[in-house]
Length: 288
Image (cartoon, rainbow, N blue to C red; front, side):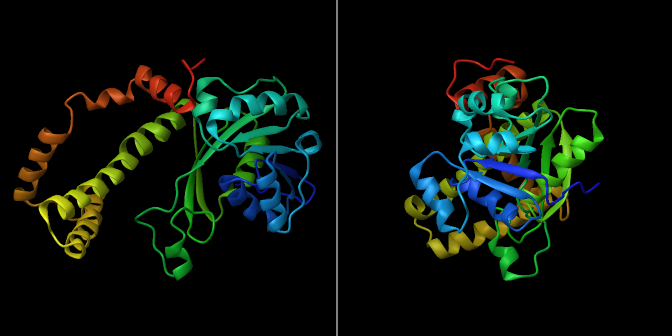
């Protein structure tokens, strides 16, 4: 990767006082970038000041920024982009942190502005961790290395390198940035990781509570066996590191028949992706 970061490169964070805005701002604050922090809400502005950072009004930060990061909720990205995009200087990069709004066609467009999306993978369950700080950093962006998936559909390698340098900074420490299309990123997030993986995580919690509260198994015993077997299930299912026993396969088959719908793979259809993203963004339909 070509490192194009320089002290004179300006990066503006819109929504810098929010949860995600604070995360990316924390890493920018220790970088060589000239970072500007913007926030509309009074509470967000105070949060920025409490961190010892100066609040720059959006209409002052955007025109001078080489990269503008929209760290605002997906549901308002379209409206915010309508205010921000006209103020961008030609050649600037507009970076969003989730693909839904970009996929849905909600972002305001300009031919002389470049659009990128970058979403953190979060530290892998298979990553090696050696320090308490790395173990404590379950989200990423502090101590535990993570990978990032990003979309930036341009053939300009210098611009891509600039985007990758900023992305690697805001999500640091970063192992690698994987480049895909906006649609592919939308399939990954939400379909693969929210519709499936996050749902399964919450489902495991519900199953634990049912085991404890309905069946009456002591919580410590139920939690111990679930946590350990979840690790085994992931290593076996995703990496095939220690194949399941024949009896386990029978139980797994019963579970699939009892819980999983036969047509579950329909969630990968374009129409289903459009529908769930429209629900997430609280709009009637995507505009792509």
